[in-house]
Image (cartoon, rainbow, N blue to C red):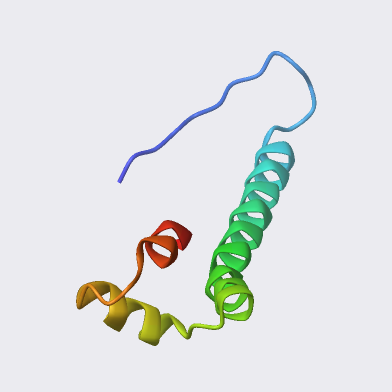
Amino acid sequence: MSEVTLISSYKHPLKPLVKAALENELKLIEAGIQRTRSRPDEFEAKYHYTTDEFIRKFENDELTDRCALLA
C-alpha cells in the first residue's frame, strides 16, 4: 500500500480539504455509475428490445443493418 504525505506552508490543516475533495469525487463516480446503470433501460424503452433479446439477436446475427446501427 502506498502512502502520501502532504506538507503545506499554510496554517490550515489539509486533511479536511483532501477529505472533502475525495468525498466529492466519490459522489461524481457514484452519479456516473447510476447513469451507466440506467442506459439499458433507456435503450429498451427507445428501441422496444430487452437487453437480453438484443444480445441474443446480436450474437446470432439476427439483426437488420438498421438495428445493428442502434447498438
